[in-house]
Amino acid sequence: MWRLLLIAILLTALPTGLRAQDWQSCRGEQGVAAPVLRDCQAVDGVLDPQGRALWLRSIVRRPDGAGPAALYVVGTASSEVWLNGQRLGANGRPGASAATETPGRYEAAFPVPEHLWRPGDNPVVIHMSSFHGAVRLDGPIAGIVAAPYPWPSRAVPLAVVFTLAGALFAAAFGFAVIHGLRRTGSSLALATLAGIAGLQAILESLRALAPYAYPVHGWRLVGIWLLTAAFAVLLVSYVVERFWPQARRPLIAFAMVAVGATVFAPGFDLKSLLALMVGLSLAATAAGVGVYRRRVGARLTLAYLCLFMATGLLFPAWLVDLSYFLFAAGLVLPLLMAEVVRLGRDDQQREIALTRAAARPNCLTVASSRGVQRIPLKDIVSIVGADDYVELRLTDGRKLLHAARLDRLEAELPAGFLRVHRSVIANLTHVLGFERDGSRGRLLMDEGEPLPISRNRLSTVRDALEAPTVST
Image (tube, rainbow, N blue to C red; front, top):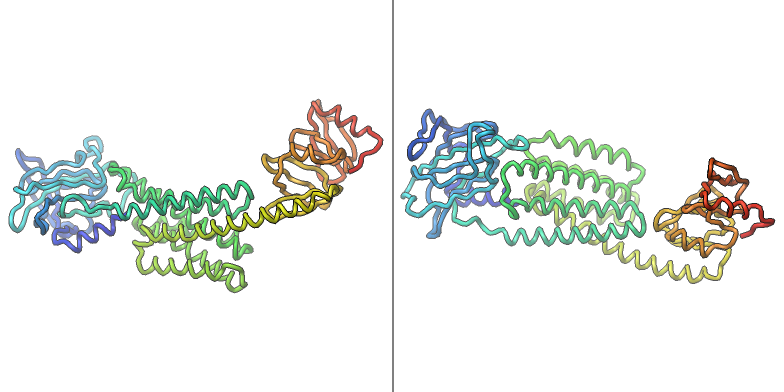
């Protein structure tokens, strides 16, 4: 992820950085000891070995300093290097076709023995090819530079990124737990946002973690763009749902189209930057509407989004490489802490409400994402189980989710409620009749759709319906 920064430092701070116009492209062949080159012409544009083999020639100077030096080749290509007529080594095996090429690593360092350096100019020759790239890149060669050996340490930036990645994965886990408890859409969106940003932090750091073959680089760039695009759309979804819910569908649809259109931008760094900027700008628009409508938290959210939009405009490489993860962590971690505090207060209030409701046997105290409600038993038509939750179907057509298991409710409810199916409890006061359905049966209710009756409960249900009176 630090490619742009490191290459920029090396190319600008050292006199040995080689640009495309410093190279000559030649017709060449391997000689007895060194390559034989002819018909050399200056390279116009970028160094592009994609789909072909190149013989390149240029001049380098030894880097300043007494320490060892190397020639670094960074890009999607296999390469073989000579300096002053002496072979330094090969990264993979360049060839004239995919069959003859062996892919090399994306980053290659060719240490130069001290005795090979000459005062002043040192001719360098590179044989290069790229036939196994996953996608075609606008700038396949990130840089060729002579610099001190080994490569500058990445320990500090990696430590920062992995700290942020750990925090993001922790936030993703926390919001996933909250979603499991409360089933709220915002917690699911934030869990996904944090998880995506954490994954991208790992993917961005892959080059420093493993010396992968150059074809992997194309898939890595595609993955980074896809994760950035997903983050942008989810960010819009979360902010719109919170501050401008009326515009949720059209704004999310527009975000998906606009973010998807960034695939046509040149270069994957620009694709990722534009996708993120689209998400930030649309989310800022929704937050701005929230400020106009005086929604709680809208001002702080808008200021935060504008800060990172300004970062993207002034320092685009920093936004994609590092600020993006700072932004994601700074967004989700405070929200996670606020959500944990809120859940603690809700649980305390729920416990108080449940204690007060203990003396109300004619009501069911319902714990849902909206808080605690007391529902009269006579208003409950049926109860349908769904894992650790149940759905209460009421006489006015409403449906409420209640954080309880069906087995526990069956034991607590009075005799007027009967388990008619492994996932259904019926209030017998709302039953109109019973009808056969093959080997099973169905209860006809005065409101809502019929309820299924399990085969092994048919006789129990028939006996209950034939009883003289049923009351709740």
